Image (cartoon, rainbow over all chains, first blue to last red; front, side, top):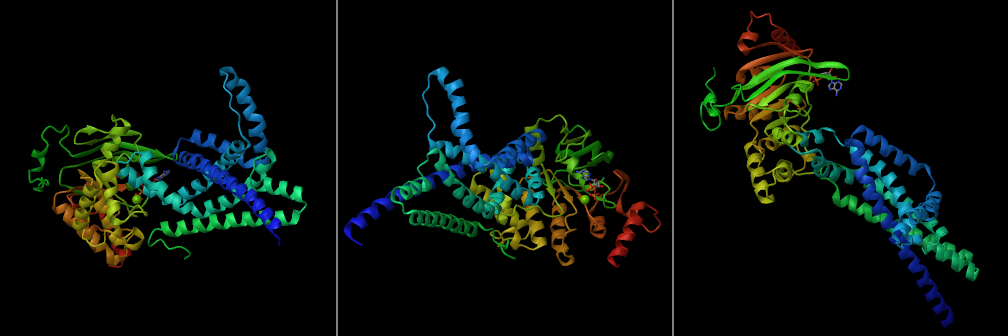
Length: 235
Length: 269
Ligand SMILES: Nc1ncnc2c1ncn2[C@@H]1O[C@H](COP(=O)(O)OP(=O)(O)O)[C@@H](O)[C@H]1O
Ligand SMILES: [Mg+2]
């Protein structure tokens, strides 16, 4: 390998590596948004009034039923232009939605729907007597949920959440269609530019695999670190 | 009247002179319908300070529902509960939470918080409900664990404790809130026979120390020695009540005695 090739390789690798950063930011952002939507939804669904839980059911049903690609276009081309036309223009606010933000919102809202189902399942798996015992001690419902239910539900949720992480990571590749400069977009560009399709798509696959591995391993570690003594795992 | 004293040593009727009904806990004419079925039908009972009453009866009779209504964990459809003369029915939601703090509840299956050590199980309500500082709450938790004979177990998690130890932690957890009354719903029913004694001992100590209690139990031999009144509950009503010797004596043909004999038969005595 001569000097020029090496330099070219370094430049290319750096280019795609920057895409990895964007992918990671997109995934972390979408999962965080999904978490901050999903956890309260799950608590409201289980402990809130019936009408609210029915309303939340509609949200979940919508985001689970619509493909990510459609959501992406809806947010980027549809919803945002409505916001621009009917709201922002009236107050002469100029605010554009970057492809990155659009992807983050679409992935985050979809993940929120899935995560609410994960947390709901975890909450339901806990012995219901604990909530009652907390109320009996004088806890109000929000405080009982926050101090007694949530810490346990989060622990129980880690394996399913790890699964959600790897799904969102893979779904994030689709963000390239609206021009988010993540791994896939950069790979596609380089592949088309150099005609080395095989090389670049294999590299992209390896990068995604590496990110999946890293996330899943970290969550496994977290699961072990937060395990409750005596509550055996893998019995 | 029984000569039992309140914890501070004052005679029971002198402790709180201006109480409306004179009773510490006064459950009046409570009814509750759940799932279209009348579970409680105008049930009344009272507890004086320092008194232990025992509620017995066949499964499904409404005993657990009664305790939870008395605690306002399940708001009754009609009727009222007075604690120290204060009506629960008229309370706001916030005051109901305060009302509940004053009544300790012990459940058959313990209901400990699985993610917390024994010490934190006892301390968490002190911290989050009463707003105590962590070190104060922990000191109090240690005191209560000591009282139920669990010194040295404070750092164990519920899953690392035996059933008897779990129930004692749950008693310590309730006591830490300084309740005026304790409601115990079959506190030993989920325990292996050899672990029942350690929990009954704690209850006996509490009763001797003047704690006011209403206990649902099938341990009638134990209960009748400590209890001032037996209440027999069936189909959502208290159908018999009286002193244990009265209801259980050989010549009695009460439902209570019939039930007691059946229990003994099942236990193989
Ligand atoms: N939430 C509920 N909905 C419908 N029925 C209930 C509910 N809770 C209890 N019950 C019924 O009320 C009756 C009394 O139950 P319970 O108070 O637990 O009796 P006990 O403690 O004496 O065994 C039972 O028939 C039970 O099935
Ligand atoms: Mg019961």
